Amino acid sequence: MPRRPRRDEPGSWHHVVNRGIAKRPLFETRDDIRFFLSRIARAVREGQIEVHSFCVLTTHFHFLIRSPRGEMSEAFRLAQNAHSRRFNRRRKRDGALVRGRFFSRPVEDEWYCRTLVRYIDHNPVRARVVTRAAEYEFGSARFYAGRRAPIWLDRSWVEAQACEMVNAQRFTPAVYRAAFTARDGAHLCDLVEQREKSRATEEPLVDLIATTPRSVRLWMERKAQLADGHRPGLPVCAFDALREALEADESRSGLWVVEDAQRLQRARELALFGLGYELAGLSWREVALRSGESEARARRLGHVHRELVGSDSEYAERAAAVAREAIEASLGR
Image (tube, rainbow, N blue to C red):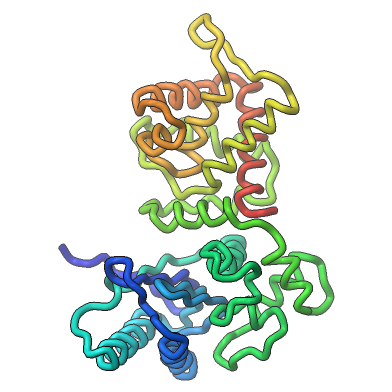
């Protein structure tokens, strides 16, 4: 089967990832990582890519890059090949080192770029290599936190975004920490990883962040009008964040029930299944596995949710408020 061509237009932004084959280490020593980064630096010097955020761990790497001339693919191909040849030669090893050609997804809105900076920073913390992102030797958070940065790291965009996010007049390491590393990233990691696995091309996140429950409701109503068998779109919140938002809603406002076919139904269940499919971008099978229910029940209650969004304004408004809270929690806002 032929490979799908990458989207790599001049000026486009991308999240680039790769891992070692069979879950083996991709880098075994600091020298391995330094050599790989030197190949990335060469690509920057040649104008093929701009690096704005990165993290290189033992088993994988993440980069947030801009592709000025549409040459991202060639830049990472050369860097990976040079690293693999050197790695194998020094260890008298033969065979593939990386899982395959690197993964990349275009990043088409500013908010998601910001989200990826936080996600990339959080990786070594999540892996329990360090307790704070700025402590990790081979991540860009260290340099934004005050260490002298390599000349190939383009700091201009991230620093401008950090100042805007916290309403600061000038950039300092404290501004960066407040903007990108001061909050927990558990839900954010789940959200980003679900988005990277998704094949959907819909990009609603930019319309749903920093918005009102009413606009979230309008988006939900549009989703409700789609055919029942449509493929979920790109995730805009983490499933666990959605579950926590529903629990917090009932804690504040009391038991949430609706009448369905002349009997009372737990609205919290309906919203969990329906929003899990629509907002968390999960299949009915995945929603069922995460909620401990059968796929048939998850699908049936999810369809009831969809009908209520279009017919019951009170239900739709409360579900939209929960959805907005889950979206904000997923992004650490």
